[in-house]
Image (cartoon, rainbow over all chains, first blue to last red; front, side, top):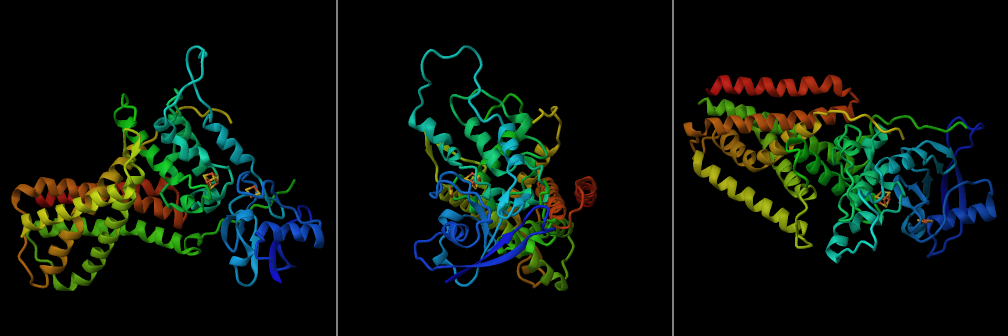
Length: 235
Length: 112
Length: 107
Ligand code: SF4
Ligand code: FES
């Protein structure tokens, strides 16, 4: 048996979250998410949490497992000794149990205009890209919006207005795309944008998709700084 | 709906080893400032008293820690692509350390 | 999200000073502190700055102090939760004061 210690918060009933313990059977191939689903299906149907794909693609199952932000579908119970503590992602308002509010995050994502910005006429044919041009931004396109990087980032947790790792990496995904003609300087080169970052680097450690958001941010700092001094230069 | 907003944890930087190392890394700058002023004092022709040596050793450790971390994190901001091929970080870091060694030798030669 | 009005921020310039100072500090401080601050007081070697290095040294000192001011400002904001409005003038002000003292001392 493995003991899961799960954070419960029932709005209107609990003033603050409380921990509840559940016993789940030992299974070598069970992820934390499988344990939670076992609880929900066989022990306590009132437990609430988000999940969908069970394979690290949808980004909805992020939680704090023994203090670390993790995708619960890719974090295995067998890798832990003793009680496994499951809490909602740190740094976000809790809606219920393990479910956090993702609205502000979604607003941040859309604030960087995450699409190909083009001027002029619609093209008659598709935009061709060389493998090298694809390589220039591909890493930043792997993000699954799981928010683990936000949870790991002390700057974000202290100041929820900070634009944050994934949104800046997403902006860079388009900035570095050869087809994009947009300019995201006014959103990114702000106190709540890249200049809020002090390069703790924990976003990169937490990211399950090797996006390296810390790198995306430092690169844009250099871009924005050079542009601030030499406005006609585009890195 | 009443969402639960957890209180801000003032001691966040003690909660994880990596956060603590981060704060240590940032406070190397105190050693950097001390060292800069120390060099001004020395350049004026003053003798640096022996009792300052322990403090200077701490400042030296801070400067070395700063140099290692700063030079090894620099390639994050300066991604170099040659013809689509990304120069690997370890080459840039290696180049930075090489430059550090070279600068140290030149400086030692100049002041000694 | 409402589009924010374009705001001027001094941060890019401060960051350039911080970064430049960080590189310079990394390259020159360890060896110089070792030679001047540790070995010389212990009687090992008799180092001196040749007079032609004075101006270079002043630039180095300015950049190192600007670097330190920036880092200390952000770290105090994040650990002690002091406001940037208070920290920034004090930190950069002290860096400037230190540079002025250095100029007076060496010129
Ligand atoms: S950058 Fe990584 S950690 Fe952050 S949301 Fe995207 S996939 Fe998740
Ligand atoms: S359930 Fe989709 S990422 Fe975990």
